Every structure is written in C-alpha cells, then in structure tokens.
Amino acid sequence: MSAIDTLDGFLALLREELGLDVTAREAGESLVNLPRWDSLHLLRLVTLMEEETGRRLSLSPVLQARTLTEIHTVVLEQVGGRSQERPQEQSQEQSRVEAQA
Image 1 (tube, rainbow, N blue to C red):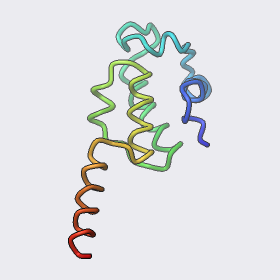
Image 2 (cartoon, rainbow, N blue to C red):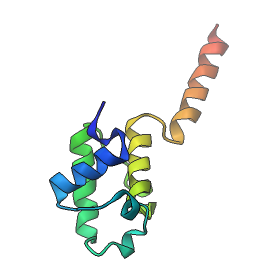
Image 3 (cartoon, rainbow, N blue to C red):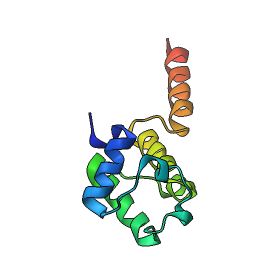
C-alpha cells in the first residue's frame, strides 16, 4: 500500500514534501481558492507523484482537475491502471484473444 492510496496519505505527502498544509475539506475546494497554491506547486506535485509511483503521469487530466481531491483521483486512476483508456484497450485485447480461440 502506497502513501498516496488514501486522500489522507496524499495530503500528508503534500505536507511533508511540498510544505502544503491542506485539510481534507480544503482539498475539495477549487485550487484557485487555496491561498498557498500556485502553478509551481502543480509542477512540483506532478514530479512528486511520478517519483512516488515510479510512473509517468499524463498531464492533460491533471491540468483539467480543479481540486486536490480530483488530482488525487486522477493519479490513482493513472497509476492503478484504471484510466478511461485502459478498459477499452483491455476490451480490444480480449476481443483479439477470443477471435483467435
């Protein structure tokens, strides 16, 4: 189990590594309303998540996220193999396997 598997763990990592002391309630608020948030934090957050997970993140979904809670969800989807593209890819692969059988 990784530190980012839960929102609390994700927020603890942000506190420890980025110096962002954000509560779970604040994590659900728009990033533009977080007084300590700026674009550099987003870049540092993406880098931190890539280092923590050992996986590259697709930036588009991260940039579309409007809250830290949404960013957390996007990261979990990408590193957990639950992105929107994967089920389609898996379905196509399953169809190819079934066709060969």
